[in-house]
Image 1 (cartoon, one colour):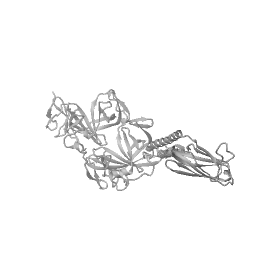
Image 2 (cartoon, rainbow, N blue to C red):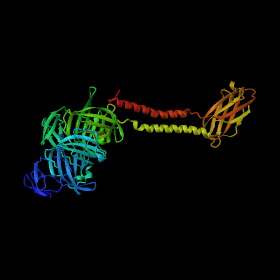
Image 3 (tube, rainbow, N blue to C red):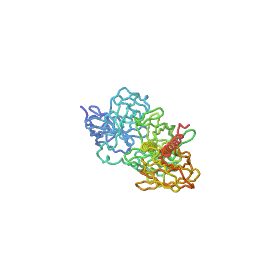
Length: 623
């Protein structure tokens, strides 16, 4: 027999259990938590106040996930020292239970799973992969310790106020998420596996929250150091705040803001201001904070700026500017990242190691959803596949991976409607797109295709027409003789023609010929004249003087030659020999065109190689 209702051991109010699987219940009247036994309740402690984390989820809310209806039964609020988070106990209509956790706008649904022997808490390292048997291989994303700070409703697990729990968060396939629960010891107590979901996938009912973006609560606080009015745009999530007037870093303790430390004032930047709203790729974003971070290499400090953005659904993104180069940054799961020597492979794409070191927080302005201190350091490594970059940040307890995509300053300006253009680059960027890299293959393909067509046309033209003699004639030499040849043809597309004449006296300049080649169909006339001396063209007539003329490319057709002969000899005699030759193609022009065509991609290749050389001069691998 199970207890369905009982008197609260703390205040005597009646408590009714909505679920027979519940083990812990929190009295709504006195906020005492009790453990349910078969016939009574055992008081286990006073529950602290629930931190005001804005959430679309409420106790007793109904929802539908994957076609299965569920209800929200209880809440556990934990804090790992960097701020609290909520984990909701949900029960499906078939009686099975699961956990629904909220983390930076993500909704993580996990269920208890069976597994074999697993490493101890001390043996786990962030970034390592572990085998979960039938569930396959998963990656350790974070190892940490949390403290139970508040409870509400009914819970199906024995969880006590103030209890400290050890955990390891996992990343898995298909947006998989999991948690290894160690309780307060070193051995895994329970394995929970599931995946990430969007808010819309939860199908929440009640309050209309599933139909709108997560609320953003604004408020104004006074800096305890300089009394400056600081506007908070996401007050329920803000853990630390950087004062824009004096550089003080503030932390909230029981709704009172206190000064942690004072740093240097943040210099103005040509970029978005705190509180600005912008739109990118169909999503709306709110600017919450700006951090200045740096890395030191070879005795030189290399700074960059990061803007924290909150999306309408509550997820966070980053806008980064390094030396005038802008990028938009999103988190990625470590499961999809595999080491390849010093490089990384992400979803099949290779990212080459570019640089690494220790990144330091130098200045902060605005509100952050985690706790930060000036001077905080983390080991980082950047791997590039322009225009994208995969960044890894590691501590002893956590590995965080993010994917950055290059953005032009014009995109940032349009995103926030800035009056002035954001800061532009003054050097080559780490993931700045190579202006020719994406088009180089297309230029090479085009050049090679066009060159092939030119060569093919030369071959076909040679096959379609033969060079050689197309007309041979001889006639008596008379003082003013006239000649009309028989009809002859030129086939193919166009032909180069040479006309040679040999006659007595030509070498002494005593002879001149004027003529025309007339196309018989169109009537087109191609005139020519021969007067200069030259080498005899006709075999067997070496004793005669000779000269020739070449005509440009003539179209195909049927032709006749009209020729008028003029001699200055007093008694002309002998015969005149006439030869018309079609010359073979001169490939020089075609090869010149091919060289020009190939020169374009060659020059672009050289430019692209120089561009990459300049990029990698800024890396850890520069020679």
